[in-house]
Length: 450
Ligand SMILES: [Zn+2]
Image (cartoon, rainbow, N blue to C red):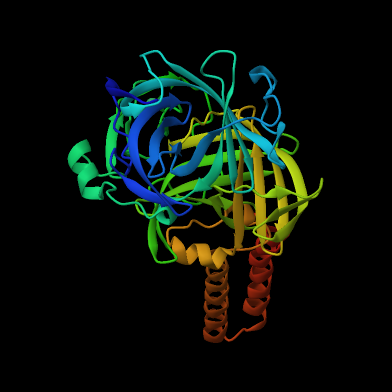
């Protein structure tokens, strides 16, 4: 049973390439998008596209932050848990698979259009828990009263669905009045600073001038919180807005977070959020000793044991467990980031690659990090600044050549005076004393750092 809802609420511009009428192929079955529910949650907007297969079966194509999943309504094998009992990391068994809860959220319906399997009024609230098991995806929906509805399927990406009638970048920019990812300016509602962000990709801004949090998901600046926070990153070696060429694509740094391990005051690292309009997001992480290029995974690794996870038939071993607190954030983000946010992190490694599990009170995400060296990053970003924390024990070339020039002048002047005056011993002794006096500070600088 399908109701034509026409249009309800006001669909907000989210720059999605999907539209009613888009077609695709999933597991050899052809489908057409016939309806949409648009919901608003912490990270911005999220779409549930209602799709109808040629065999008359229907399903949902979920779209959030550029990640997609197709799910069908199924009958539960086991009674679904009560919603308040579900936490990220909770386990639910279905069809012989062990699913882990990755996301528990409440969302408000913003609008809907086309044909939907139920009537949706304004004020409709969705309460869902998402679970994953490798590429398999499961949603338990608590939106319709006491009985939970189960949807099961897989994480997908648009390219493998062979979609037709997607909106082109041109169509989107004509409709939205702007090109997705283009830079737009909003003024900070707290201090008036001109905040730049990429339309349709960033939903949350952290003001570099006053550290306030600002929501920009609806292209308007809404002040979320005034933050009395640190106003500058002490360790960042790349600037917001810096552009770099990585693997043939140009990326812009749109957000920057400084994090700290609460157990150790000197364990500090910087995470840069990079954006490219075709490729989406990429993270670059700067630690004290190395760099990591990191992408968020739409397919989660499978847990093999307490210490081993498997991803694409490769085993990764637990190497570290620690907490991370945000101490500074500036720029634009695709989720709501705030100072003092705490995340629990587990790192699993295999050679130079790490799988990183990040868990908060509301969600679990997995990402894959590849070790990169300083020279590679310097090639990507020629604007990379020198590491100020590493100068200890090293004298800069400038300082060294300054002292060498002083020594040369000292000897030349004294020996010239000696030669002219016919006495070489005293000028030579004076030069030796001068050398010692000049050399001593250099020696102590090398010993104790600057
Ligand atoms: Zn501000």
